[in-house]
Length: 305
Image (tube, rainbow, N blue to C red; front, side, top):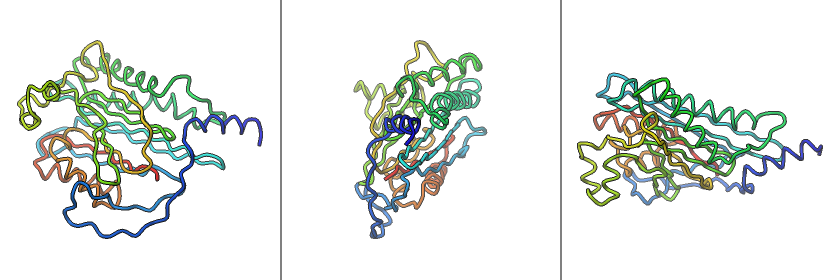
């Protein structure tokens, strides 16, 4: 092995954990029509090399005349004789209703964040002589969100948007979040967990114990945000990293989905779908069938393993 190959191997080794042994495909019993929240999701065969399988769907909804949601999805598997490095970047943004050019703000947020991360991480990863980043993933995500915030402030004064972004690199997952779009982690044993905290007025009132969760669901100010890109200074996004689970799903979605379709129904539709693409379309259809009061966006990522 040449010195260059040794250097590349060492660098990429920092981006992933130990290689996981792939399990054999198991036969599963058919799921009932109405599975409970604790039942396992539909079994899928293990893939070699391990890779991210992604679907997305979007709809203007039934009651809006234009779409203020935006999404970005980039998935890559880099495999060589000695390494497998999954790379994924997924972003959902929801332009704020009531602010001018919400759809422009969400588009700028998506493009700025994606462009920043592709130049900072993706391009170097694919170069002939890849080099490790000179910052932590947390710092890189922080800088990307700040770039998006500044771009909106400059190009769309008065505009605003939510943004939820998930970066997967090797065995690490980093989440950056502003507003009330959401990221969920869904395990194979049927648990669904929100990885983000809504930056909304009613969520804060619930946290302070001033209203109940049921009251928040019908509160007249439930769509009012106290933190969003392009709105207010100082700007402080939520950013955290965690170890990438060995299996399960990640769901990114705008409030046009989670505010209309219950978590139990979201879980059921994902459980009973054969692919992320099918699941996303079912989720969007469910939101529209419930009245479709807002734009709807969903990205579903099936994790390796």
